[in-house]
Amino acid sequence: MTKAVCPGSFDPVTMGHLDIIERAARTFDEVVVAVMTNPRKAPLFTVEERVEMLREATQHIPNVTVTAADGLLVDFARKHGCKVIVKGLRPIQDFEYEWQMGAVNKQLDDEIETCFLMSRIEYAHLSSSIVRELAFFGCPTTGMVPPSTAQRLREKFAKPQA
Image (cartoon, rainbow, N blue to C red; front, side, top):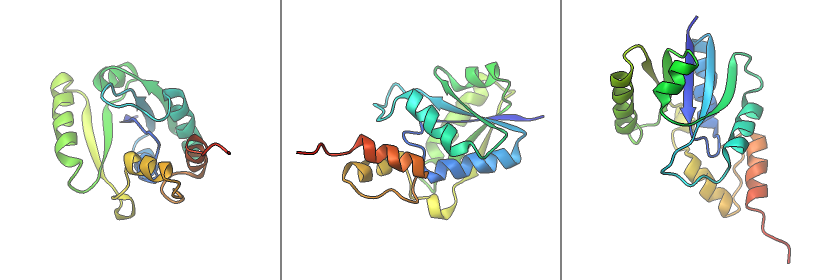
């Protein structure tokens, strides 16, 4: 049985993230989605909110669990018995950073492999930061994020009534 971890900050979860998670779930016996804390980022949503959004978005996938994580990813993978780290790659912008992180993780634990899944072309332009910016300006995010996440974005950026 192969268990994989699909890590990310997921602030918020996008349809691109969800596509990678769904494809990982078809490839591996069990997938743990790890909502990571990134000390270099100031998140819009709390870790608890992001975990909840991902649980809502992945409830239709029986072999996926969602949990919060902090610290080193390889430590999390080891602790949870994950032998594979699944990362999504968008054209060009993700490759160098993700390759570097994969190499570092391999150096830290030679028993854990990194698997890169290329993003589908219809999601290649999506990023959480773009979605946050669109939502901030009141643009609809339908089709970019799961419906429950779109609702949370609307609530987060709702303008107070005068």
